[in-house]
Length: 223
Image (cartoon, rainbow, N blue to C red; front, side, top):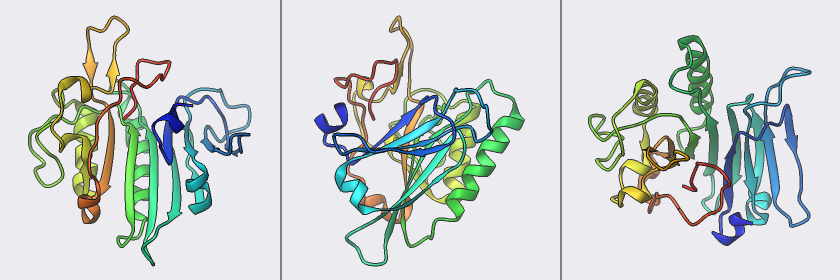
């Protein structure tokens, strides 16, 4: 499993096609947590998940399913009184109508706001957003890839409002280590998956880049 190969404690997954909230345990010890459409007889489309290593599983405090686009987990940390919250997202595409986008971002903002400010909060996943590298100096570096799109503006606004630093715009890397999605014909590269951390804990983030050697069986790369 690529998760073990790269020594990951928590792995975010999109397009799981699972419905409802489901927790499993694999024979290898990892625990996948699934969040999908909540309605009975819902279509098996979209969906997000977090795969937990044995170490992460033992530190898990609890988790919440928020439909096919958002899942939240909370973990114990070595720092007394500090909880680590990880929110995995799968945002609507840039061409989605505004009502769908509004609903997603209102829900996401509400979830972030319920995370205590004293805690470490990580927001990550497929935001379908090009963040760019201009403006928003308070929460963004100058190493983003591509020009900001409409989703990127929404995403940057949310991060600025909730004081979340967009990690992949901070660290200098070659272009091939910035792109998170590559078209099947390899002519288009986009940076639409992101990892953010609340500004209070910015210094704990050491690097963000893609891992092109990982086998994801999709146009998306490990971040």
